Length: 382
Image (cartoon, helix red, strand yellow):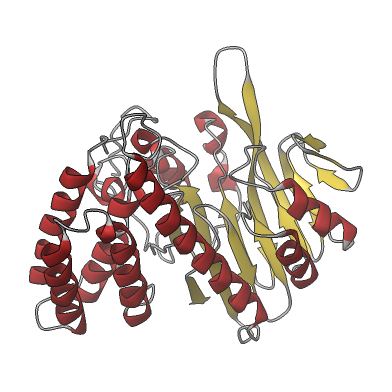
């Protein structure tokens, strides 16, 4: 029996803190991280980082922001994404991504935050985001994976590039780079999916580049804010029988992300089949009843969903799909640290593992899962 705990969807636990408090909390967390990494290559890297930051903290109170991003980048190279089995390497991976929560939760939007702190945050964050975009562009230039594999690259907090030996497509890409880079992306992919018209899930100039390159755009609406093009493949209702676009078989559960009593944002949950793989991307579909129809669909190999969006109610019917108990899908919980939100609403990696409506419910039978930070990728093989 699978137990589900019901909690409010949009409750977040990371509270605003002044620089000195946030830095001190990062120091405490790093000390705990060092203890868990004892005897590994990460231990010395963390000790050197912590020693240096404690030494300069009084004279350079904001240096830790950029330095934390730097040590996270180094550790991510040492410990690439892996399926979380609860063992030491997986715990190190958890702590690596949790460490990035601290610099990304500087309270940059508060009037009372000093200008020097805001400037340090902006510079460090821009460097972090630019480096992750470059990682994604470099990934697009790499050879395709072998037949029987699918390579998934996390672009921003919810956007993914997905590649097999035969094709490359994109889902929910918010591209904060240049239009020239958008043209490179458009040339490299075969199609792009938009789950819903929130601009952390698409970028108008990227969609235009994709359309101009003659590649299909699959969307829950014909017209998106900032982008109106007759070439959009709009799927505006639930579709159990698949259509084929760019060699990809597409089914849709059409719902919405609720934003108020009078308005809602149309959202497509896509179930797609390509090159022998089946993937389901929830987007931000908050229509729970419609998701109860998921067991009648093919069992997915890969499941993508934002970790805050009542994922237990999403995973439970998926795990009732035929064969899912014996051969469970790989789950990718995404949408951490959305920088367009206030600190209070930047879903943290801390919450991912500590809230019982995320990955913290001891009574829920979770499928295997993998946690990535922006710019990282993982090759999935059947």
